[in-house]
Structures are given as structure tokens and as C-alpha cells.
Image (cartoon, rainbow, N blue to C red; front, side, top):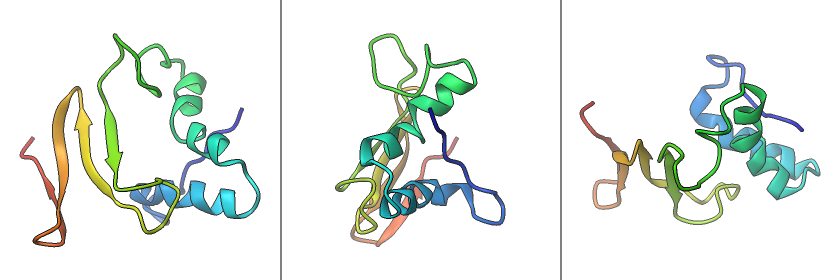
Length: 101
């Protein structure tokens, strides 16, 4: 089992998906790459019963992408924490909009 991270702040944490994409470019299986930034870290820190995958009863934390998350042309369009929208990409303004927390 592997997990991918960044050395934030040198490589900002919001570039995490790009770290996974680079790993795929170098030969990592795409499914393993996605698991390395979702369920595997949750397993490593002992909270896979709450986060890291989508299932009934787990925290509703999810990002909706415009396409394959490992494709650099895709973008995060919406993000939710505990089922509440915290981010959306506004195509008319060409920028991300964060909810007031």
C-alpha cells in the first residue's frame, strides 16, 4: 500500500493530484494512484471507516471533477465537506469560488 503526499509548502498541498498524475506518468497504475490520495492515506492513519472512499455512513467529503482527475486538463468543479458545498468553479468568471465557512 502506498500513499502520495507533497512537501507542502514547497509543493502546495493543492497540487497533490498532480503528484499522483506524475506517478502515473512514471508507470504507476491509475487506480493505485487514486487510491494513494484517497483510501490508502485513510487506512494508514486509521480512519478509513470515516473517510477515503464513498459509502453510506461515511463523511460526505467529495470532489466532483470535469473529467479524469489524473488528466491535467480536468479541474475540480465542486467540493463538499460533510455534504456541504465549500467550493465551486465559476466558468463565467473563470475562477474558483469558496463558500464562507
